[in-house]
Image 1 (spheres, helix red, strand yellow):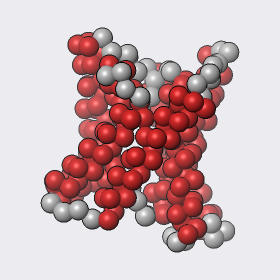
Image 2: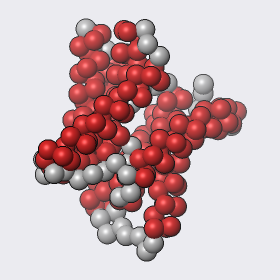
Image 3: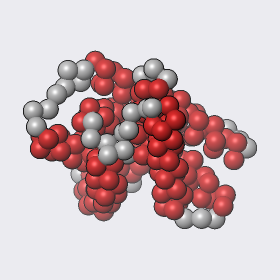
Image 4: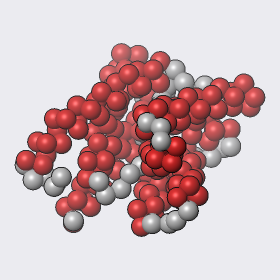
Length: 211
């Protein structure tokens, strides 16, 4: 269990760092992060702090639907707070002066950050200790409605992208949906699939963690 928790914490740190790098690339982020980045700019709030509140709202949503509060949900709240604090730390301090010399270098770093984020998310998911709040809410809705999880998760992205457009048009917010958003949607899922199909069995075989 100590090994699992250690790996999970390292994965969360890697996830937060990867998200911060993607944000710094400024060529577009995933729908959920795009909404956090645009809304936080309008509210003059740090992006990690707004993301923290968004993730906690997903936990609250699960509690309302399930009508019960379990340890797993408390762990999601802890995860939300940790991610928010870490994103703020990396984005505003460690990567504060991060710049790119060319568009090509930006794309390369963006791709690498997405790959490391998929690895981190896959590692946390594979250990089956805790789920990310948004995925947890989508799964809860899927179970409640009987609809496929993938469809619910896709609808969540569509809704948040619509919110971003509304914020941009109504409040003159920053447009954070760009080519990087499309690239991320195309490569993140397959990268996660590669991890779950190939890297996870190898890590179990090497006793990095148990299934």
